[in-house]
Length: 172
Image (cartoon, rainbow, N blue to C red; front, side):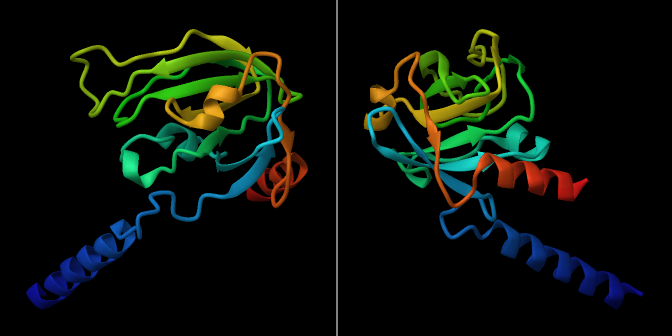
């Protein structure tokens, strides 16, 4: 019995270590897509679609593991009140709120990082906005500096909103 328990512990430990070995990509199998900004620049974003991906967001990700010129797009099925906070973050963010047409409706610039999840000092939070999607970029990103309220962002391949909606329906 003890030998079976030991084998199980070793197996689970190895599985955990393999799962944690991220090859400097803490996002694992998170899907990516490309967006075209009003400036004409292409932006690669990691998609946060599931509630688990959205809750994780960029938490725990170190500065060197998230390129300055990439973003994370929080994809939601519907318009609704959106408010973001910054627990366990290691770099400041520009948080961009988008409507159903991917038009920028609000931007909160340089939202302070908060390593860890304790409340001392308080964890930064955005105001609440009626939005459909939210885009996060490093505050020091040159791309982030070009985005303005009223800009329209265009979806590109490989993953379009229709493909995302289809994959969400298939998971149910």
